[in-house]
Length: 318
Image 1 (spheres, rainbow, N blue to C red):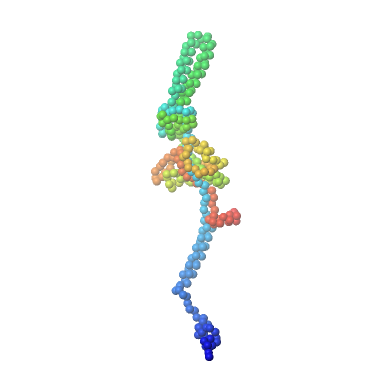
Image 2: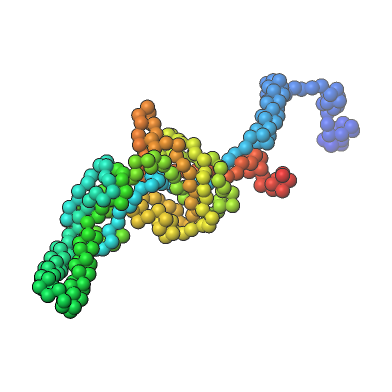
């Protein structure tokens, strides 16, 4: 009796027709309808983009800037400061007024000093009368000399309460009002000489850039409140050492306290000269004033973009 296994062909488990069809090697085609021309074009575009990108990062460079806050300074300004603690009695000038040498600017309260001068003058006059009655009285002469010195000292104290212009110029700033109390060293009035048209710029940049900074480099300055109005300057001087925030404040002056927003850390002073005492914004001329602030930047380094992306290449480049 025969079994199913004995009925199968002895050539194997595959049908002979299927084996013959497979041996023909006919191409059955792609599963999807696909145009190979687009594949070749995409490969070419990718290759061109890669070559163009490599050329771009190899040829083009990027710049590194030392940037920081900056303040405008009017060269030649004369600061009149209080020498003693006092109360302002009167202000005799106003900003923009022309003053000559010796012109009274501000009078401080001097009731005590004036009273002392009146007493010294009265004592001197009485002693002078006694000496004139007896010119040979040596004691009277000595007393008169002492009273004269006392009177001169009292007059000097009164004069110190009157602040006068030490040179001719225009009053650029008045910081006090009648009745205001002032302390020693506090700014009272600022006078700018007529010929002091030169305006300078003091920038504060991080001390890390000090080895790369030098006179003659190009600086760009943007004044606060006037966006995209740039002034291209030339660095004239760089501080020899890095300084801290307290030293920066001392160099800028007490009147600039808090005017600059500085990041923590040591700073380097970078100085430049502005080309004129005025600038133009949107067709309108404006004048620079002492204490105006802005942002300054100095280009310190330029390197290819490829080196920036692969820093290890720096050792291979000159």
